[in-house]
Length: 364
Image (cartoon, rainbow, N blue to C red; front, side, top):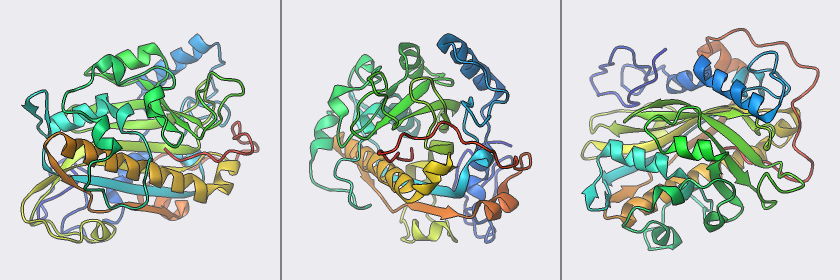
């Protein structure tokens, strides 16, 4: 299966060979076809080997299978619990920003957001999908000059971005170094959620959540897959999240589920940056808190969109947020229609290491 190079099709229904996409008038029954790639995505063998090597560095035993229940290399969707979350958060880019005197093209926007993603992760002030049009703290955080790379991929908890207890940083220095290269695959990053601090403090914060960059296609997208790490333990959700760029064409028409996001017509072809996720709760404990888990994720990615919007406008561009999708669906229904991998494993008698009671984990 080939990752979609674009998630919008022209109104005549033309589909580029190799692309999995369902946004044309000829794809009325496509449903969640655009999530099919993420639903079935499994980190490539090279990424699994790299994760296995990190286990050796941590002196942690290798799991019997990559997606084993206890301490897996990665959290697979079939091993998850409960309903599946399918979401989509776009930001229209009406005019690209200018950084250091250079006006970025769409690929440049994606590259900048990736390399500086730690600066975009905060849920400060997120109340709804409507972006603020007034200058704010976010505008101050993104001056017209590009910050030094060494300052935008911190290792450990970044003091400058502890807003409402959410931040993102590199797991180790090697991850920070690799993330800002043109080949970020195998980099491990982790989110800090809640107010208990970084993973290195005692007791550990159970809301620290690890992800690995499992795929990167220059000028198009990257994918985070949720993983188990020595310091952060298991992730609250099992699945994959794609970040990418695409273009909504003026003549495009949309059926469900996109109609609620792209209901208003555009007068010109409009590029946008997006994040798209497919995941399920990891443990029975996480599933019992599913409402909190997925609401936390919704606020996180809505906040990400608002930060991208603020950064674009603070640097001479123009952006808007048309809306978003964030819904839960029966795994059995989605599996029958879109999952093409091995049959679901039998129910496990035990769950991965659970979240310690008292702190609800957010979905990232």
